[in-house]
Structure formats: C-alpha cells, structure tokens
Amino acid sequence: MKATDRPDPKVLGALLRKQRQEGSASFAKGNFNVVGFAVRGLLTAALVAVFIVFFGDYVEIYLGVETAGAPDPDSRLFELLTIVYSAVALLTVLSAVVRINRALFESDDMRVISALPVGANTVYVSKLIGIFGYQTIVSTICVLTVNGTIAAHADVGGMFWLVTVLTCLLLPLLSVGIASVLALPLHGVKTLLRDRFVLTFVVITVVTAAVLAAYAYLLKLVESMLLGEELRYFFNESVMNAIAAAAAWLYPANLLANLLVGREALTSALIIVAILVVCLAVCLVCIRFILTRALKARISSGRARSLSKRPQKRMHSPVAALIKKEFVMIFRTPDYMFSYFSVALVVPLLVYFCMSIGSSLVTKLIGVSCNVELALFLSLMFGSLANVFCTTNISRDGMMFYSVKAMPVGFRAVVFSKVILCLLVAALSQLMSAILLCATGCIGVLDALFVLFVAAMFAMTQICFATRVDFDHAKFSQEPDGEIKEQSNTAGLVVVAGMLTAFAVGGSVVAIRMVLTLRGFAATWGFLTYLITGLLAVVAVVVGWLVLVLRLKERYYRFEGGAL
Image (cartoon, rainbow, N blue to C red; front, side, top):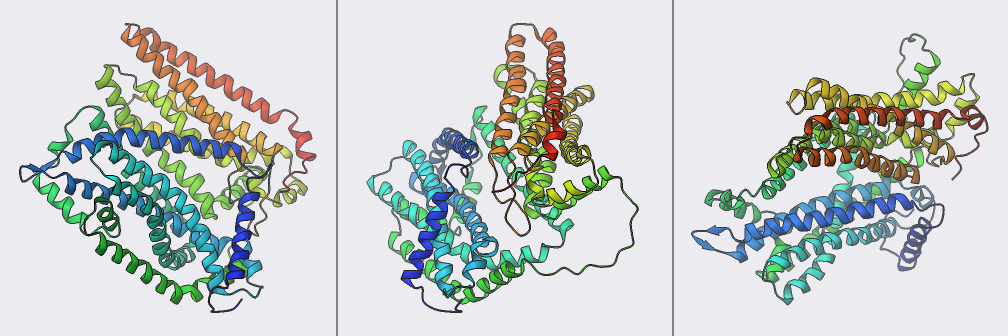
C-alpha cells in the first residue's frame, strides 16, 4: 500500500462497489438475520413512538417557560434544540468512532487491501464514505423524530423544514468528521487495555452503570410528567440562566439550532464549514499513523504476548476445567465481556430503577400495590435480554469445538459445562436483583426468594433451548481469534422467546393482580401468584431440559456443523 497519495477516483469507486456488494450479500438468504432485523425494527419504532409522546409533553412545558416575566419562545426553542441535538450528536459521534475503529482495525479486508497497490488515503476515504451512509440513516431518523415532534407543538415555518433536510446531511458529516479525529486515541486506549482484562472489565462495567444511571434519571422525568407534576416550576430564573449559558457553548449542536431557528445563520454555517475543514486537515495528518497501526494489527493479528512462568496449579475435574475454559474465553474477549458479564452485572440496577418508578406509578395512578408481580415481570424481561451468551454456546468455540470433541471427555461434560456457566452468571444477576429489591424495601425477603427461584428457572429454560438451537444451527467465525462479530438468528429467536415469556407470565400476573385488586379479590390472587408462576417455572425448566438432553449423545458425535 502506498503511504500517501490523493484518492484515486477509479480505485475509490471499486472499493465503494465492493462495500455495496458486501452489504447486499448480507441480505442474501442464509446470511440475513431476519429475526434480529425485525426485533431491532420493532424496538426502534417503539422507542420513536414513546419519545414522540413524552417529548411532545416536555416541549409544551418548556416553550411556555417565562424569563424576566415574559415568554420567549424563540430562545426556548433554540435552547431545546441545542440540548437535544447535543445528545444526538454525542451518540452519533460515539457510533462513528466505533465504526471507524472496526473498519480500520478489525475488518477482514484490510489484510487483503494492504497487499494491493492502493493508496492509504483512498482506502480511508472509502471507509469514511461507507460509514457516512450508515450515519445518514441514523441521523435522519433522529432529526425527523425530534423536529417533527417540535413542529407539532411550536410555530415553525417552511424554512424550518428546509433546514431540517440540510441537517440530515450536516449532522452525519459533523459526526464522521469529529469521530475520524477521535478514532486514533480510542484505539490507543483499547490497545492499552487489551491485555489488562480485569481493568477492562471494571471500566466497561462502570461506564455501563453510568449510562443506566442517566437512563434512570430520564425515567424519573417521565414519571414526573405522567403524575402531572408541574415541571415549569423547576425552571426558575437561575436554572434558565444556567441552561442559556450552557447552550451558548454546546458546539456544534448550537450551530445547527441557530440554522433551524433562523438566527446567525451565515455565521453558524461558516463555523460548521470551518469545523469540517479542521477535521479534514487533522485526518490528513493522522491518516498514515492510523492506517499503519491498522495494518500491523491485522497482519500480525495483534502483538505477541509475553507468557510469564507460573507455578503448576492443581488439577481440575473435566467439568471444572471446561467451565474455566468457557469463562476465560469470554473474559479475555472485550465484546463478549461486555455483552455477557458486564450487562449481567448492571441488569439489577435496571430492574431496581424500573421497579421504583413503576411501583409508584401504578400505586398513584390506579391505587394498586403489585410489587411482587411487577418484580417478577421486570426480572424475567431484563433477565431474558441479559442472558444472551447462551445463544453462542456452540458457535463461540469455533473450530476448537472439534478439538474438544476429540479429547477423552464425555459429551455431557462438554455441553453441561457451558450450561452451568450460563446458569451461574444468570443466577448471580438475578440474586443481585433480588437482594437489591429486598434491601430497598420494594419486596420482602420471602418474596425476593420466590422471584429469584422463578427467574432462575426460566433462565435455565432459556439456556437449554438456546444451546439446543445453536447446536442445530451453529456457525463458526472465520476470524483468526474466532470471535463472533454479528448476532445470529439464534440470538434473535431466544430474545424474542424470552420477551414473550416475560409478558405472558410476568405481564399477565401484573394485569390480573390489578383487575382482581380493584374488584376486591387481592388476598386470593396473592396466593395464586405463587402457585401459578411457581408451577409454570418448574414445568418450563423440565421441558427445556428434555429438549436439550433428547438424543444429545447422537447429535454430539454426529455434529459436523459450523461452516459459514
């Protein structure tokens, strides 16, 4: 690869066609994750709908806030747009940084392209254009949702919609430009933490917990609006002055807000252009270093690790050794570590936040106390979302599965070691949820033990079904490290099944409890809650276990799957 050059239009066009063809191939039959795509689409639509409803109420309140005893809707609109676009810009920049690092440091084609006479700038520009296309889709959804909601509650003109269309292009340009500058520092941090597994785990878990804390704060605001609390009294003179001062420094979101409200439009446009030019200049300076690091990482598959001499540890039983192998494989893979372990540890916080808000909402809105049923519903729902690493129990091994299969170890030890580790993690997550709910007074000790039992039984059921499905439809990664980069249809099916179970069991007992309590049969249903959900949990885990062990030996020794 040439070190520096101007992008070659012909080569650039060829690289872009290659990306387009790869994208089209991902939608081909057998490669397309239909269930995952449908779930993401439904979740996106649900989030957009919820945002429109609650953000619309907030817009009505905020635009009516007065300063100096007089309304100022133009200033309120500018502040509101600045704050919202700051959040959107932050999310899109983070998304672009992650995608740039994946394209340069983790993409398979970089190893092949490095051996071709292709200019570094040409490769870099082709990657940025592909990322820009994705960012445009995401930004368009965000911009149209935000601006459409504001337009429904504020007096805006035709220029607002014209600038909205322009913003759908400016926002991804800014996010990709800023992200291209931040890509190298992020890779440096990842390189620093690569072999520091404990530190990586702590950092990832703390960051995830902080994000959930911010989510809980937003839920509190939603609760305030649902309960009819007057938010405009919160926006006193000092608070509004602080918001106005912050909005003046929230670049580049305030520049986009200026364009939308039609003030200082020329100055804002020139500053945006200047920001893009500066980002381009920094990219040109850093491009050689970024791609050099990328090529070294892809060609060598990471730097060699120095293996220190350690004393021989005591012998493990086959099952214990296999469980340790599964744990080490996940713990030493950052993506697995986050998706499996970190999420499982922070799920109790999410259960507690939603429990505290949901309980007060139900009590104040309809006067019904159904904490046990609500705890069951939340534990099942979030537990099913967190318990996803069982969906790769077979695929995660890659070609190493055949090596383990050739060892003098029984098939039950191989399969059950995977199930045991998944169950331990799921049960630990549910135990932390039960302890947190009990310690905060949401439910009693016996109720917490019951919720733990039911949630653990359904988690075991989910693990058994997921392992069986992955056994029948395993797909091994072709990466040198064997890491699975994309979720399969198995993950989508298991998540959907878990969500449906949570609503069928937990949602039903919550709804029935509400109806019967309003009709004066609360005491009778309290006993039935334990009986019905307990029996369902036992039946579910028995069925799940039978599905897993049925003809397990025959399927194990005849297994020849895994090819992509």
